[in-house]
Image (tube, rainbow, N blue to C red; front, side, top):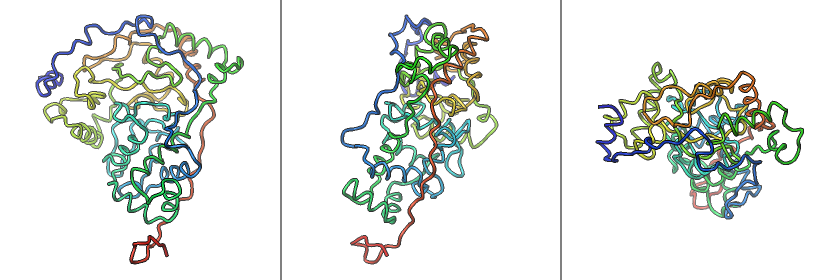
Length: 384
């Protein structure tokens, strides 16, 4: 029995006919995509204003490895400013002693997203921070341990009191990290300047590439709006990362995550690659589908795709030009067909993609506050 049949039997999801009426290649056959646009103001929850103390607390926590199980890896280690706010690897490094199974996405402009992770496993920045910090392949920490560590650091005790009026807590720590991440934005790309009125900001080649993006290449069908993503999920026929054939740690990581989502062994042992959005929905039609990634800050965030199989934008364009690769799940989108672009058109399309990146966002690691020793009895929380 193949994996898809097994899913039907085990989860009784019924017969789904979405592939019988798949989308047409033409952009005009789809729901009209949102036009490309400059980034608006960052959306901020009204009860979580980006005050200086709140952002400072979040910054320190983002860079602090003590919010991981063994105290050696922080958010920054998988989202490093020097590596495009990702980690620069095809597949993320993972918690010490493990290896992750997906590409680490950039934090830049994540404040605008409504869905997080490649399969949209979280719907808020705060939930994303919690999932990453507590996940076995990432931060691998128990929240209560994180709380006790923060309570032992005088600077954190003071900042939590000033920002939230209470002692350090895991919930408020995630709020603070999300506040800091909302400040990590890039909106000065040549494309932004061009659509705001500076007609000299984009080259002729970049403008031709934009026209291709919106017409012949059809990229706008999924990569649309100010963030250049519809945040929907598609199987586009990305080839598997060969590490899943050769590296036992990657295989272990994939199985651990699949088991963690409640998928039985009879099913997951048949997968030779990441089943994507299916992990969240358990729906057969979601096998091999991944969330459309934003295209901003691209020049700093290689490698590309959920498994990092492409290292240059030229490789990405070639992949789409040939109509993607073979699909083992039977869910490949009908949007992915050969484009038959000329060499000049490919170069122009790459130039446009490069116009979506602005100034590199450098950020030096802050000096982290040290642990302190609490006096006994600890009822007052006074430090020596």
